[in-house]
Length: 474
Ligand code: PHE
Image (cartoon, rainbow, N blue to C red; front, side, top):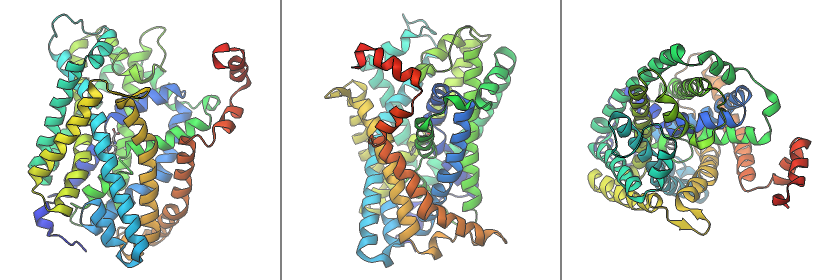
């Protein structure tokens, strides 16, 4: 059980508060920015189907593992794992230390570049509410100018970091829980309203067909691996966010139900956001859904201005994106703050301010375009965290939960379920011990390029011939 005094570290006052905070962490730029553009790139329906499979088979078991580790350990990720793997001797301690430190470092690094992208959404929100002198709203070049102008990008990142630090300083109950309980229902309401709006003004039918009619011809192995990687990112797995939130839970009898609810709500937001965005894209003749990362910031504002009440709709939409990013960033900072508070007994405000300041500094380096070798720090960090640290963190958590934590702890969330609880628990343990580690290892191997030769051979002949004929590729 918990080593520290639980009331001093804070608690969620209600289960609903925990649920909204966890959904707030899960629903973020991954849902509104990344999911639509990768779905667009991989051709829609078939990708969505694979993604749903990844969420259920890998995402959900890992999500439960993280929450129950936090709940039973009652501390930050490192402390919780250390407590729960105590009986496993040195190996247990080593795994706990490695997993915990990776999570703390990964969430620190991730917050730096996440905040820069979130800063862009703040800019677009402010821009759609009021004018910015000399800049025309809806001009697709605005995004490039803004994101590459060091001063603008830095100011936006600073504003966003201050918002994040402010809430975390206020504490688990008065800050995080209060904000998420207020914001998340608003976010759902906005999304529902946007769906109705595009139902009248844009091509919702075409958009839904694109998302839900599977065309398996566009689906290769890389789409499957991309879907698996994204399942981690979108459920905030692999870096201790859900462990940390779980540690502020009072009871574990709803952990299963909550994990399912978090995964369902997160998926619902991704699909709704996709439906809205593609409906707008399809409304314009000749536009392709595969516009890439620029979909949200270049394509959408240009389309919004042409729609009835477009400026207002744009403001509401970017407000929603800011909310989503804010509640995710809060959970990233909280991983570090919980670590500092629990392990080093720092006062919360010192931890939030101090760590926030360091993250801010790294974010400024990203915002002003510092490069490391050939790549920008922003892209380099994104790559390092999303492609490597996150899946490795997930693998370690699965191993710790499946092999080192006692079943009495790891299965405690199942014991409250009537009848099926026992069999579900066995199924979960099988997934987390064998299936999750294997699948996640495949993703990691894919990221390091272990399957490159094989994937190339798998591509349709037309592409390969085209490549060979292209002198640039030789
Ligand atoms: N789940 C968030 C998103 O979809 C990102 C995130 C990952 C947040 C890990 C916290 C921890 O944007």
